[in-house]
Image 1 (tube, rainbow, N blue to C red):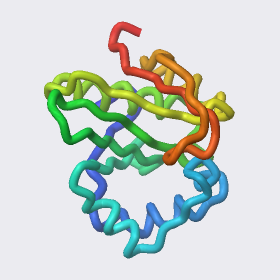
Image 2 (image 1 turned 180 degrees about the horizontal axis):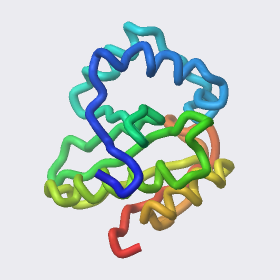
Image 3 (image 1 turned 90 degrees about the vertical axis):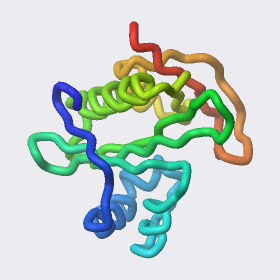
Length: 157
């Protein structure tokens, strides 16, 4: 899909991998310290308005993306994701996120957003490299524990 990565749908065979990834403190700290059991991961993979993706580089799984969408038309939504620590710093997430966001626009989505925490400067820079531009900043709310940045995908970036 991307130049450096492939993004494929997550399947039941990926459940244990996702459980292990989320149990790593260097992953869970970016997901509000959430960890998941195998049953919880299966439930998450079956969510109606969320598609789960595995990011691969050189044929090996290195990360996770999810695309979610709002119920109202026109279709719009966002991405969330992470790379395992050993895969960070090589531009893999930017590559995968750009490819996935572009494919969603090509499929008719009107916009694709991300909402990293402002304190996670590495993620903000990574999303920028993927083509997301800052729209606004917001304080903690029901979905965010701290200040967060709303960013929208701009394929021209």
